Image 1: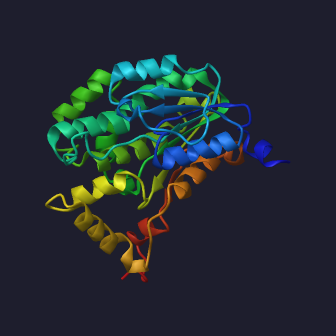
Image 2: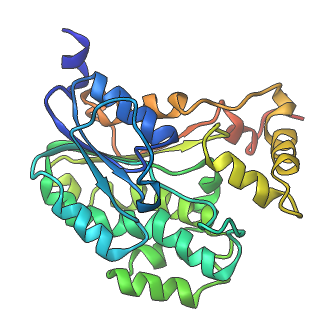
Length: 292
């Protein structure tokens, strides 16, 4: 068996959001190398971005805008083998803190409501035994402790009602990046045996990356610092999460490549998993004597 047959992507249509940077770009590149027909989504404000590899189709869409989501669905083929939701923001376009009320709503729209809205619209386009794989975050580690709030939002049916829920619960979405990632983890577990997935053996999983050297690194640095100093914030992050174990930032490929594996035929019997790819850092939050 050759490698393309093992992965099962050769000649198959796949969707990758957030495909122009970071983990999504790494995943999209590998998928093209494995013979997939990649439909790559880029935010509208990234129109001038360039890919250094060929994809089947580029779709520009702001995933925080319902009309763009509908346009995205209309641009997709009717036979998708795999979907990779790799998009996400921590700060808005003006770079303000994601604890700002208005920006918290934007983060929730892009990071969570878009995925929650798109899946039912796209599900009939996915082949039997296809897959959906989502990038969440190790920041969503405590989703079980917050699952009541997560489920309350996930149970809201329409896009408009989801936006309204966020507007009415600023106390819950104050740290919108974290809450959106908690909700994504909860979504995967809660929907594993949802008939719209299990009736056609469509798998759904997510990865939870640890500290990764992507564009969001700068955003996290500015947010972590009380004065918005990126360098100071990054130093604080490294002091808390990396230096205790002489650690290092992951590369986008160290997240994008596992993502591609999980969505492939190699993992054809795995679903409902929230996989932490963080060199074991999240385990230390439970107990690890070598951390202290």
